[in-house]
Image (spheres, rainbow, N blue to C red):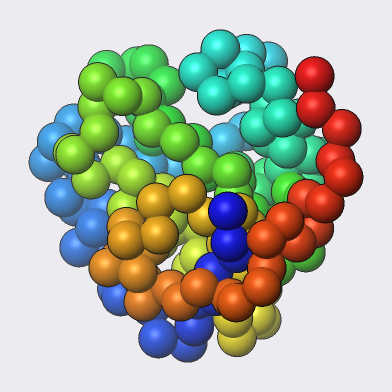
Length: 157
């Protein structure tokens, strides 16, 4: 999967997207340390060991570089940044049963706005899966010849 590039200086406003998520009963917020074990196990269960490992790194950052989508007191999705590389967004995922309610878009924008506040002008979406989603919501473009990029030769189990 190719990487994608996002102009952080040209992002959509965050508040309307957070409002849409709230209206669907989904709270978007930054993760905190005491819930690390819950988040990591949820990510491992739904998305595998690789993403769980990246998420653990996000919890080691200060502040934690992981946003959560919470619905009815349960984890519904997550998004990390600065986990695998500086200035990289991902991994991110939403529970299949809750897709289409705006959580993914809200997680993406919350993370990208946080990256912009760190001073970055652009962000890389590493190994982007849903390219049309990223292009539609944040104007991301494919970085040509970026497969496998930083993931070349990484060990999988």
